[in-house]
Image (cartoon, rainbow, N blue to C red; front, side, top):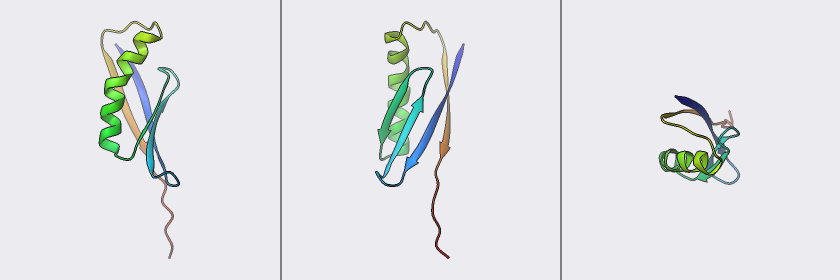
Length: 72
């Protein structure tokens, strides 16, 4: 079983979520967090295969980070 942590970061300037993982390697972006997670779920096995990494079961742990400026 392989586990990978996918970091999901909000880019406020571009108004998109960015998914990244250096082990797979993977970088994707989407304006919708739900759609981005689905993109990652579909792309990760294909990218692993293209990079010659064998797998039977892959678990993806999604970690989100979003920073917001609050004006008081």
